[in-house]
Amino acid sequence: MTQLKVTIFDGGSAEYWRQRTEGFRLIREAEHAAQRLADAPMYLHGGYDEDGDVIAIENLSPHDDMEDAIRVIEANETAVSILVAQGRTRIGGCEIRAVIKAMAPDYDGIEDPERNPLWGPATD
Image (cartoon, rainbow, N blue to C red; front, side, top):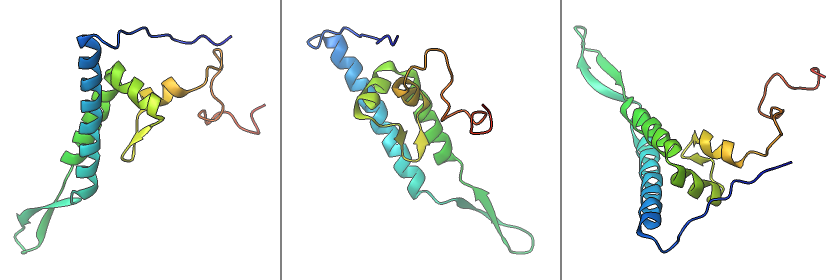
């Protein structure tokens, strides 16, 4: 038997709108981080070595920013509920596991065969 999680809220309260504003702000920040990640160079110029060759430095900052943005969204119940309502499981190329988990069907304690690599035609 599937049980639904029912959330009761007061749409006229200041707290509800503060939470919604915060949730949308976090999503917008993640979208901006995804755009920065897409536009950022893969390597930065780190100077020259003794032979005159360029020293390339990996540009990991945009990746770190995107991971942080996704982590903050996953920790915010309102942001997750907004993304679930929108049916969005990714921002940029990053999967948001909390949204996927919230959207997943309830298998009544049985693992999802589509997401478990141990399930397959030869594992009956």
